[in-house]
Amino acid sequence: MVKVMFRDKEWELRAGMTIRDAILKVGLDPQAVLAVRDGKLINEATILGNGDTVKLIAVISGG
Amino acid sequence: MKCRKCGETAVINMRQHKLALCEEHFLEWIPQQAQRAIQKYRMFGPEDRVLVAVSGGKDSLSLWDVLLRLGYQVEGLYIHLGINGGGYSDSSLEYVKRFAAAREGATFQVVDLKADYGQSVPELARKTYRGRKPCALCGLVKRHIMNRVAYEGGYDAIATGHNLDDEAAVLMQNTLHWQTGYLARQAPVLPSVGRGSLTEPRLVRKVKPFVRLYERETAAYAIVRGIDYIYDECPHAVGSTTNFYKGLLNQLESRSPGTKLSFYLSFLEARREGLFSGSGEALELNECEKCGQPTSAPGLCAFCRLWVPR
Image (tube, rainbow over all chains, first blue to last red; front, side, top):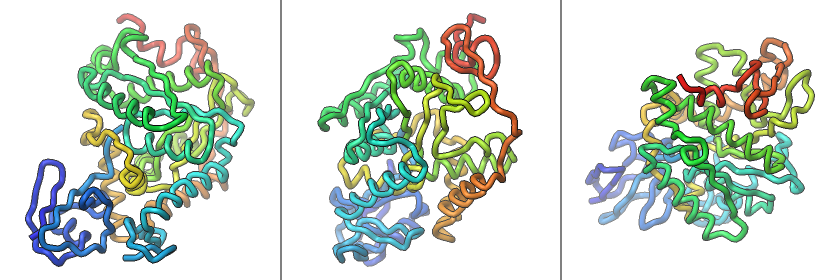
């Protein structure tokens, strides 16, 4: 399974899907968030593996 | 997905450019894009002194970082607005301090609205806006202080971190309401022009070097570059109309990559060709009786009127 976090929310998704699909699956807009795994930015086509934890970061923030 | 330039794993795919880049090449690409905008729109040159308005957010800190990397003469300005009982502004300031402490040559000054003028933005809003969202008032305060500091400090330009999403959202609002006056004035550079198109020395040129970058890219730059920025939105901006329009534009972008870029750049082209010429009347500027800054109406400027007891 893959853990996806966004602000104070968390989801458990199956491994093997792309970041883009994961973002759509949790109801967010791929244009509006970026994905970080192990502190590194990852592209939307990255396939998520078992045990991955991905933090989604809203691009509209601050200021 | 591989970097188009070197074949390493890409960290970002910019669908509107059909361009995927790795960390190294993305960190090169962003300053190149900023430099391109600076030159294309004649924002400033290496000999100019630039005041960068910094809020502690990703756009302004990334802009400051990029301008330092490009070798421009820049200094930061943080305006403490007293948001959220001062807590949000205090936190934002801490991010600015940490950024500056970690970079050679990153100097900045702070203007504290409550300490220097007597009231914070929320306090002013309660008095003058009767509880409405203080965003318009906040914009007025920031514009006034930025201009005053830049003028008094002899800066050639004020740079702000506005990105393409900011501009496209404003453009959408102005278009839906056919605000032709605002459309005529929306541009990557707001020149220091006053009466009869003559240079108005008290009005410092405002420039937006990130105007061709998506918000997604400025956020990605901050993450990849390791810039720690304030992630929480200003509490007054949550649910704002601008953010609503940004969401709508992102939906369009998802369906049709490049929509935001095309919308904004086509507008600039139409504007350049004279489609939005405003009323055609030269802006008549007066000198504020109290602070001396340029103002459209005689008497006190809008900022000084805020402080008149009611």
